Length: 457
Image 1 (cartoon, rainbow, N blue to C red):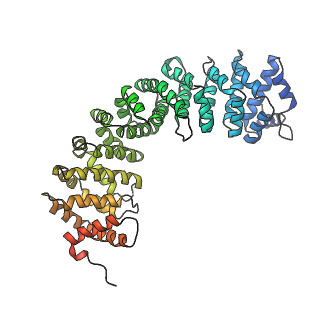
Image 2: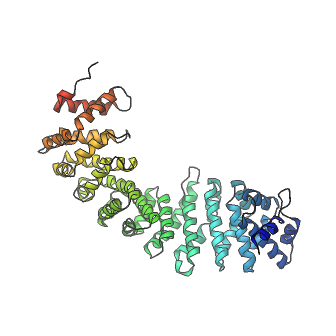
Image 3: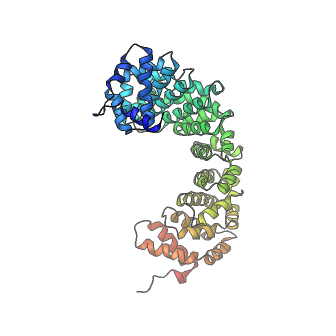
């Protein structure tokens, strides 16, 4: 049909006052399957056509009182009728919270759960997406969905993805991501039940050879679930750490970022998890992803800072690696994202703290141009970086060790003396951090007394 004629035909389905045409309403109420299919198809086509404002069209469907009828059609043995009905409900859940709530009040959740297992791909796909939309609409609706354990069809699909189409698997993974999204009002017991049921299946899915898109959604779902020691232990027991480390170097941005952010959580979840990351060569993967993917530098540096903060033995693996010069370069790069610079500086700060016990840390830091990097950080506009840079410089030049004089010379050659003076003087006039100002002045008085005097008025 000509596009103009189609538009005219679609407009006939809506009255001047924004209601569904009586013929359509009557057709859906009819017991005649042909009339039902014709009317439901017109509504579904109307919603897909974007002929009128989506808000007007969706509200017209809600106001018509037809939602219970359309929802019941989800279980129709007629594949075409079920497909069109699922398309309508999916569009409703893409509307406002009030419209989505109207669908839920009309009994959508149990019917969508049943439809998720439908052998007709379009019905199952639309039903899973609609459930995901309900979970993502509001915490109140997510609680309702979790209490009804409406995520179970998605888990059943992910437990054996080979039996389902790629579209259905993608929708299931995304639905689990929506169900696991963080929220302050989500009922604790409901999300705990979901976590207990979901984590083993999601871990098994990650271990299998699945496509990047659903893998990224599943990894993100696990990250959202990773907020308790029990969840940490379940994920560790799921045996996915080797796969997550592999994903760190994936060319798929979503999968790589998701794996890095999940490992950030795991790295803070205890010594056992951190050691597992190290045992699976996470440092080598960090070197690859930090070098090749600019958007991965911040989470990569977050993992590095967790390793640097750990025991001296674990931190030694980082300070002796090729990641160390990457960290100093990120800190020194004025064009680098501030958040990445901050996390890289945090890692250097923790490594410098280890140097007080093991001076080999100091040697490796100085050789990797840590002093020069800290000088670059002193000129940064992010006041979160400067205190750590000052304290790292203090460790390197103020501790008694064989390379302290070399560190001080490097500081002078990098304009670090003038930059420390700026920190001292600005700190005197600001409340942002008196401690760093005092430390900067102490270093100036001790090693560079000519720069420690107040400016002349």
